[in-house]
Image 1 (cartoon, protein in one colour):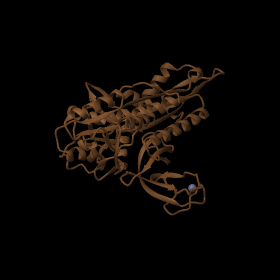
Image 2 (cartoon, protein in one colour):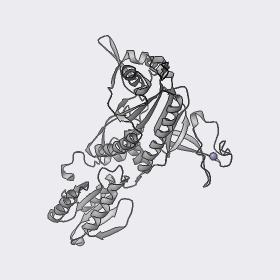
Image 3 (cartoon, helix red, strand yellow):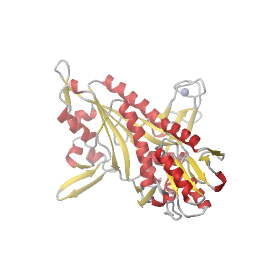
Image 4 (cartoon, helix red, strand yellow):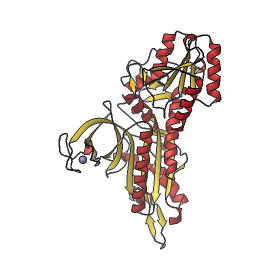
Length: 417
Ligand SMILES: [Zn+2]
């Protein structure tokens, strides 16, 4: 992509009221635009990050045997009344009336999935069902101050699973938990599985995936596991049975620590609560009618973009992990275009994802913009590099002058990750 042709470039002015690091950097670098508090456009550069993140999630969901689909966002009141959530979740839901009929904009899809299941499932042979989609969610947020970490409208992957027995649900629940840990690891995040309250989803405890971060809105208490300890005890402060400095109740050895954290995912085991409310039954082997066992699992895609920026940046800009970066390489020309054009064409021919700053602006501005945008590898072509190319990683200060062939080899290797 030629930067001169890219819609949504780096900007000097951005909303002064925006206090979060993620929104400041993403707006300045041209990844997003703010419509109002908690409502953002994902510009072309940000769209590529969104696509990368979704692809990693998709790969790991598919490995668990889940099927991707797409559900509607406009829901009739009746379906939410079946579980009682039209009233109990009123605070977070956008609800409205149109010609005497009431609707909601979706913040989750348990009711819709169960409605599909009761139409499509008859016997135990149809189970388990594992379905997911990527879609927009709406949530009324009175305090939308954390940039794209907490939007009134945001993108999410939500997975739902239905099982004949509690044991089968439990097995898959932890399989998804493992898939989630793999996803976060691929983005360079060390997530903790934290026990938490279920909010508008369930009265039972649930599990959140939390990443330690000073800017996080959650507070967690966790076992500061020593090298030989793998107890991984962690609780959200909302329900915590311990405080900082206590001895860990699980391993009875290490100390409990307290930290701010960002919730990057959550999983909910509902058992038969929802299927009972909506009357979703299946016939087992013996011909007996049984209630479905049901669970749901979420990862915020836009929140993931914000989390990566909160954790991976410096005073110059964003530092994308390779798995989420919009492009692999940022090519800068410091001389007449012809030589760089040729290198750009060669990179494209080798399927390298490259952003080529072909603008007629100062070297200083090109370097500053490259640091702000945060693509993992910067390539510079100048009279000084002769027939070679200067290569620098965003995370390092070290520059190397390399043959294009060597650069291609390295960038090809990055694609294998
Ligand atoms: Zn412990």
